[in-house]
Image (cartoon, rainbow, N blue to C red; front, top):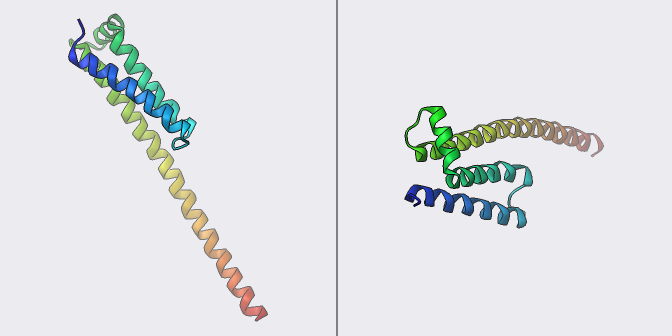
Amino acid sequence: MHSRPQIVAVFLSLLTVIVIFEMVRKKRLKEEYSLLWLILGIVVFVLSLWKKLLFTISGLFGVSDPNTTLFFFGIFFMLLFIFHFSVRISDLSERTKSLTQKLALLENDLQKTKEQTG
């Protein structure tokens, strides 16, 4: 007999995988980012169906309720995603700042060139 949280976990993990494939197909999500989401969906799916593995992992962590372990892994992966995207945002922010400064210098040079020729 399957528990309600297990059924929800199976449903949500399958839904996650389907949505990710659809977004990649429509080119709304890059493949490099989809890999992280697919791993999350597959791990949650496997853990929610393979109860013995889930009980074993729960025992290793000293958790009595396997559903808690299942959702812990989901939250842990989400935190990894947040960290990964925070790093990417920081990098893009620095690159945007650098490009803005270079553009300002080029516009200044263009303005000086126009003043000298006109």
